[in-house]
Length: 142
Image 1 (tube, rainbow, N blue to C red):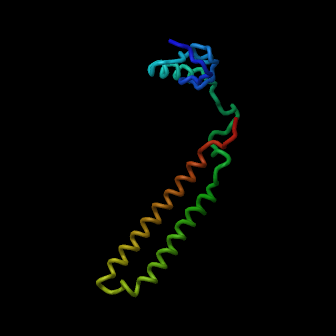
Image 2 (image 1 turned 90 degrees about the horizontal axis):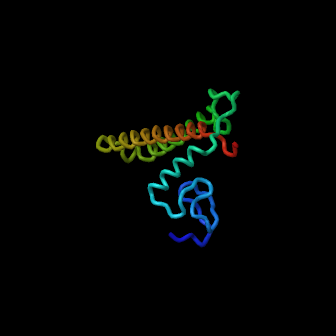
Image 3 (image 1 turned 90 degrees about the vertical axis):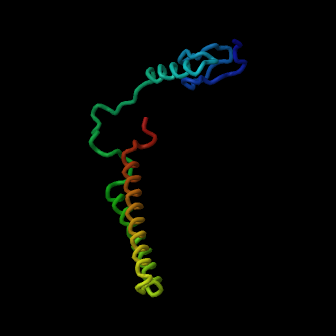
C-alpha cells in the first residue's frame, strides 16, 4: 500500500495525521482502512474519549437552565390557541350567511371542526418543542 502524500483525516476518529503516517496517531486506524476496521477503531476511540459528567453537587432534578420556563410555554400555547380562535371567528362570521342554510350548514360545521383539530395539533407541537428545548443542555457548557 502506498502512503498518502498529503495530510489526512482518520475515518474512525477524525483526527488529523501527517502525510507520511501509515496509521492514525490518535487511534491506530490504518490510513486506508476497510469498512470493518473503521467501525472497530471508531468504537475503540469512543471508549477512550473523555466522558463529561455533571458536577457531584449538581441538582439533576431541576430543569436545565437556558430553556423556556413553564410560564413561557403556557403563554406560547395560549397564543397559538388564541390565534386559531381568531381564525375560527373570522371564518364563522364571513361564511355564516353563505353557508348558514340547511344545505350548507354541515360544511361550516366541518370547517369549524377542522380548525379545532388544527388548533389542538399546533398547540401540542408548540408545547413539545418547548419542552424539548427545556431539556436540552445549554450551549457553551464545557
